[in-house]
Length: 221
Ligand code: DC
Image 1 (cartoon, protein in one colour):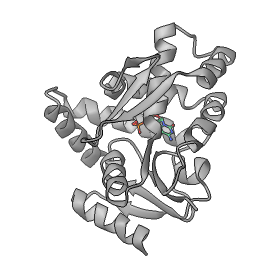
Image 2 (cartoon, helix red, strand yellow):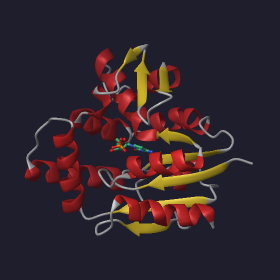
Image 3 (cartoon, helix red, strand yellow):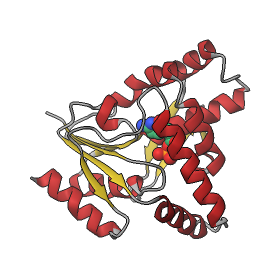
């Protein structure tokens, strides 16, 4: 029996931080599905594939050479695309934008489905994304959906950029957050929405530790 916790929610809500912490505490595997869409978008861009060419997109998605590595003494996951470390590149804002665009194409989502399901291994998995609870692991026993106001998510994103030594303009970040929400929620295939059986946690006024405690309470119940 493989335990599965799905952690879904909009961009900038802190899914990655929560998913990593819970996976570490429980000793479970981790799936950052956004990193798969980001790496795929990068591959599409590097190869100059037209995003209207669904046949080529499907073939690339099925044959994508993607590897995830976790350093033994760190929580950080390295992502290798075609053997090249793209861990920093996939985190850029423009890659997230491209990922959101290619992720709206049904044939791409279908081609990447099995690759995500293969992350489910004993003793358990924490899967972070947009459709983990509604589609990829719809049978999961534990499901949470994290939310926060767009303003709060933009503030968190700005802080994250500053910690990485980058700058950002809050009004621009907020506009990007709102545009990404709109695209991810209104698409036809696996739109961003909570699973019916997900615990919805509004994190706007909560600290990271408070959110972790709520999620751990669910998983331990
Ligand atoms: O979680 P993230 O910001 O790394 O995701 C980047 C984009 O990838 C996001 O805007 C939409 C897409 N995505 C998706 O459609 N489904 C997922 N399960 C994860 C990400």
